[in-house]
Image 1 (tube, rainbow, N blue to C red):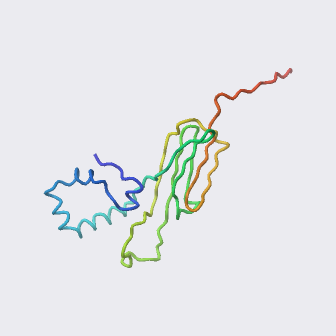
Image 2: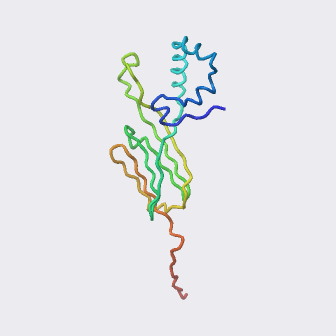
Image 3: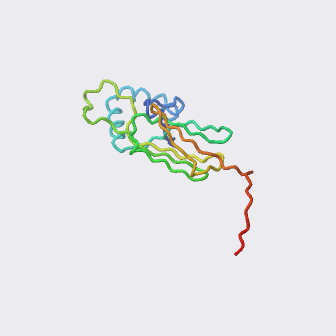
Length: 160
């Protein structure tokens, strides 16, 4: 079974050690090292397919809010979409690569460019009307007010 790589793994180009050991037995590791040029070509072709990365987030709560934080540095606000329901949150975006630099001019290219997304179920229902998103120095902060289930209100009876 192939596991989807996390945003950080795609961002840094790293792989999990246990995944590498499961997928590549000891006898085939030497072949992989001997054929570095062929492996690199396969990886480059895979990038052209435009895989979607999973955005890493922090999710925590305060007394009145659920807070979601994500690093979105380099993403233009027009390329970011945030969808909220009472019990879920979806983030989608695209970080566009600088096309003025040709591939052969790079010595190292480790930054993640392309589309990313993340969908999560929220631990509590939230008030959609009070939600707000703030971007500060590349950090997206989404504040979702919790619904107060203990709140009561008295209705006045209207006579017709």
